[in-house]
Length: 452
Image 1 (cartoon, rainbow, N blue to C red):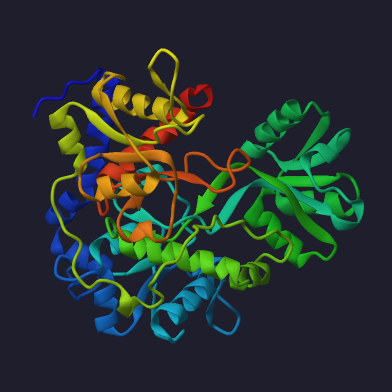
Image 2 (image 1 turned 180 degrees about the horizontal axis):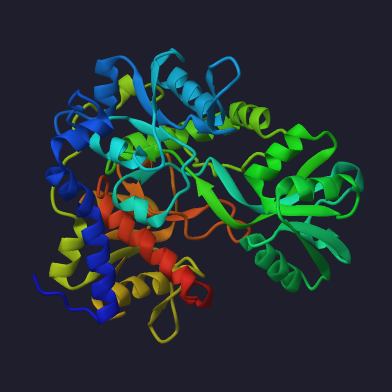
């Protein structure tokens, strides 16, 4: 196979391809004793013979990897019980999927072994206080976020401080030597306010200064500040996160149906109030995360209703695109500002520029793209029939469509649009989905996205 691409394109492609295959290759060459020390003496079930849902139903219970050393997500309480936010979420998902909240086996995992355990099939899901990181996408898939960490503010509730801008002219405590100090100064510059940053060696020292009125707020990571607020009456956590870090559940790679099922269950828990109730139980001083909702109806409520066939293997769609040396994208015919034809006959728009940037980075040529126009429902059919490589039609992740196609991460959301927009992709192709997501993230990182 020949790659017709510029050097940076080749590097991106090779990185994604190698990362995607690295874990499978590594498992083949690991000493059996080492692998068994991770996953135990029993051979994990083969997802080449049945879907994850079918394996769980046959077993009769879920195996979920959790932490027992990361409060308040998962830890052993004074009564020697495993408790936490992740534990409660997992219990509720088990109840909805299997009809019995006790039909779950919690498998203790660590930061080092949680991904190998999921990738090997030893556990079905991970609810393990796990931030989404791009490099992890090469080995497992992720649900949509259910928690966001990041630098925020701890304040005295009686003072009425509710946002960063309210700190103008005030003193704010932060732990010296942490990124929070720099981020706080950057945010003050962005808001054009004056803040006096007082460094402290530890959170207890900063907390003493806050309760004594020496500072108006403490800036720090939201998890720590939530724990301080829970233990100290009269304190609350306020303000949007800086440098957000999203936590998500781990899902077996290339199982689009199970990932959709998990996402829609989390969304339903948000809609019916269960998620907010559990969040406020463990983070009483904080505001629950606004979980993005997918419109439409998902026909499946229990795992035994999902398809039982194993996920079909085969080459990634990336190979098709590279061999063809052209990207075929389904777009709107006339839906400005996403896609429209200018007076000179040129197709222009936000989606058009995004796709052309894909072609430039993947194939070395922004013109190496063919646009197929139509309405979103038509374009979904074309994607299923393998007539196009992706759908970039200001697409909303409809629940009905999740039975037929997969979706990228969100590439446009509030306040620009009322519902988050995504790119439609072939199902069960983790490598291709990761390539699209990595490219979207790179567009944002290097400023191209903001320019578009």
